[in-house]
Amino acid sequence: MASPLRMALTRLVIGLRRARDWAIASVIFALLRLISLLPANRAIALVDRLARRIGPLTSRHKLALYNLARAYPEKTEAERQQIAVDMWGNMSRLAAEYVFLDQLFDFDPDATEPGRIEVGGADIFVKLRDDNKPFIVFTAHTGNFELLPIAAAAYGLDVMALFRPPNNPYIARRVLAARRTTMGHLVPSRAGAAFTLARRLEGGGGVGMLVDQKFHKGARTTFFGIETHTNPLLAKLVRQYDCEVYPARAIRLPGGRHRLEVEPAIEIPRGPDGRVDVAATAQLLNDKVEQWVREYPGQWQWFHDRWEIKYQLK
Image (cartoon, rainbow, N blue to C red; front, side, top):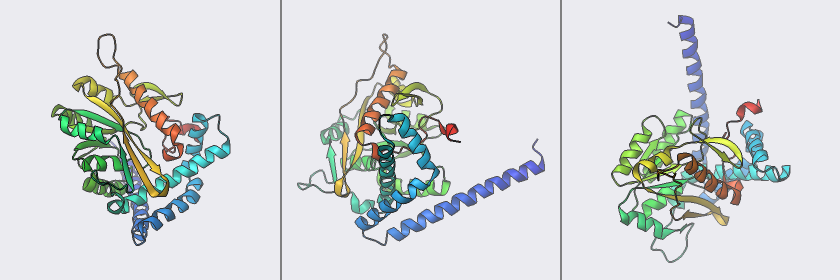
């Protein structure tokens, strides 16, 4: 049984952590309220400029540069610095765009003139809506990936999205509330999430997943030629429900515009017995994400500890 002193210290640590999280969240929410007073374009441009100055001063910048050095050994230090700075601009825009989402998402499938949002692969959205068969759409933390489920909804496509809540519980609650308003069914990536997604597929519905997050166990794969673990959930769901899998991504364009792309279904690797090869499928997902990131490296979140190497930075 824990001693009274140890229990008291544990409560103190938890209390201090909650106080810190509340303080951080309060500052972030106050900043978001302030920028909401500005016109959308000015506000987003302002936070972009600020993030490009502040981001390089943080500890996460060091992790981003370390990741970039391993992924791009052929690039110069100046080139990697520029990618990291672009990343901070992309991240700040993502946060600010939450505030102005109603104004920014002007996509209309029937519009004749282009707006801020354009969609590639619209016919695939329509096919998935009309087929009434289970499917999985996967994406990565590139551009404003949050726009993908909103675009799907614009086509009448209902997708249940798996997401990882922020570590800060106060921010997590606010983000979840904002996402539920515009993005339909959401499933936090915690215990029981796999069963929820399985029931969705069993009922003939669609599931959306981010596949570039850190995972402590799972399939042994490589990403940018570096060994890492990849979540096998997507491959296991395909093995169980034999559903099609579609890559989708978001790309930032000049002038505050976005392009959302849905690609044709990928061919899932299978073993000699015809069953889905889980490890090979996980590698296929990594290869697709790597292709996207190499095309627009400043639009991916390099400060993620995707390769679990943080201990090397101490």
